[in-house]
Amino acid sequence: MANRFCVTISHCRTDGDKATLGFVVANAAQGSEKETMIFLSSDGVYCAVKGEAEKIDEGAPFAPLKELITKFVNAGGKIYVCTPCLKKRGLSEADLIEGAVPAGGAALVEWLSTDPACVGY
Image 1 (tube, rainbow, N blue to C red):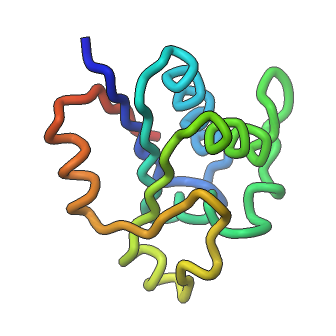
Image 2 (cartoon, rainbow, N blue to C red):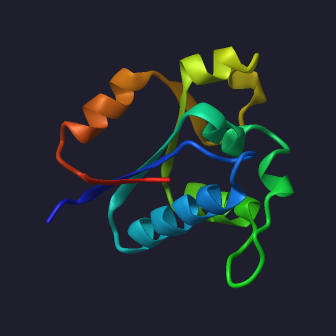
């Protein structure tokens, strides 16, 4: 059984439900003692932009996105944010929340090369 887990999220502003579900699953993996990484791409990069997660609350039974992100980071989860996707949107590392790191596709490929399970939202 793989000890690593990856969640890719490509939505935030365009579909808060998918962003929320991605972080719910990532927190579940983290709680199951899996070394967990989230890779944010396309519109999903907004999950890691300061002030954006506070705008997403899908309601019960889900916690607000900001709470899910904070829980994930505090538990040691890794958040990688697609660097070209940031640049396309006029964003930079300075715009990101604590715990989020800009990374290119090579970082995702490297993580996946260790044979973790991966799901996408």
